[in-house]
Length: 72
Image (cartoon, rainbow, N blue to C red; front, side, top):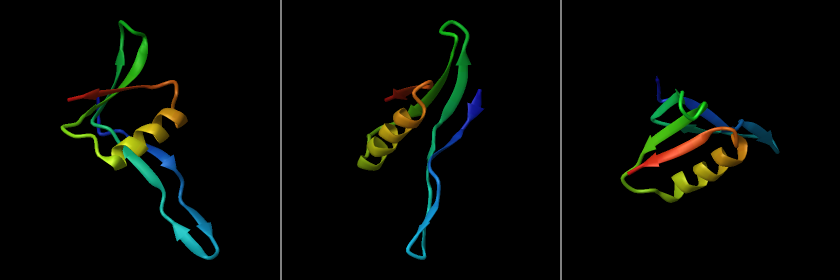
């Protein structure tokens, strides 16, 4: 069980002399499920904010091999 694993969704970059900060997603838990034979990422949410919905889409796009589970 890993607590608060960090995933880089977009690296920082420079454009026209301006540095843009990267985007990171910090989940609550990450573990390997022996029954399913795969890594599971869990996040506990009371309310899914607009920011989280965007980060979830970026996460799913960048890490299709990982299973993201939202616990309410």
